Length: 77
Image (tube, rainbow, N blue to C red; front, top):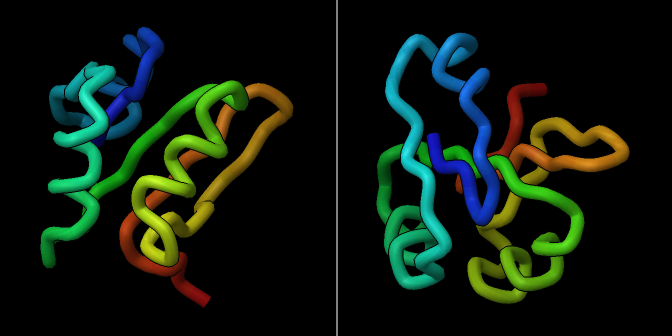
């Protein structure tokens, strides 16, 4: 789980695992091109940058007015 350009301490509670906090677009790109599932939470000011960076691998799993949860795999049906 990645928190991009924001602090999200509650994510560790929900995921039960440490969260990577970063603003490194290269790291995000590398994780999203890997075969292992990757999840990224970010605020709306970063939606366009993330979607441009990872392209078709930016699958929205969950969205609120202020945040989106992206994954490099489509959500389950």
